[in-house]
Image 1 (cartoon, protein in one colour):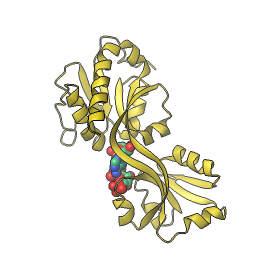
Image 2: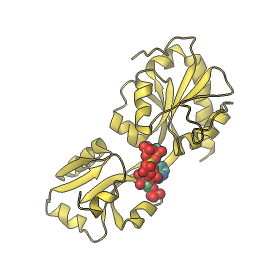
Image 3: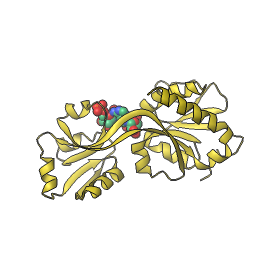
Image 4: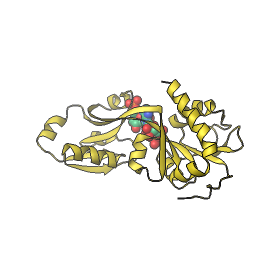
Length: 224
Ligand code: ADP
Ligand code: PRP
Ligand code: MG
């Protein structure tokens, strides 16, 4: 669990993913007095400097943030609840909900597919999703038999080409579902992004981490 970055005197490394998580975390970093010096949309750099020589940001895939933090390669990171549920949360301390990247996890089907009747009749459903653990738990709790098909993106396509009867995906405005003639038939849970901290780093670097965690907490409450 203790990566090479876990010495008490080493720098703090924050793991973020490009796009909405990076964009929505910037104001929280600013509130902690930290300004990132590179823009991941225009730079190919994966380690970004900040105005604080002791703090660096690494850019990783959204689903890899918990892994970097779990092994201590990053001291802390920001990840969606959806991603954390799939990862399992091992080795991670989850101190705060940052209230950013808000969306919901839902079941959707092609318009015209009678989901309620299929469920009532005990049909075995094919469900395509990136979120297999969340989907497995959801359908098990409802007593619905499903065959899960793991995908890595563009879930909305699956019912349109006959790969699946339903999908489990995150929905925000609903625009992607509408554009693909899909409808939401079940709400699974609300999703937002969380700060995650390596458990060893929290002990060894508490003095350095605590003020940043507190600034994030204040700023995330203020932004409502
Ligand atoms: P990925 O490349 O893995 O899709 P994203 O940047 O799209 O990464 O998503 C990062 C996190 O943002 C997700 O784990 C989820 O919690 C949240 N999210 C995903 N899609 C949306 C959306 N359309 N609106 C708001 N939040 C979203
Ligand atoms: C996410 C998600 C949905 C869409 C939902 O995709 O996978 O497809 O957002 O948002 P909406 O309800 O506002 O349309 P994203 O934009 O992250 O694209 P990508 O993950 O496929 O890159
Ligand atoms: Mg996405």
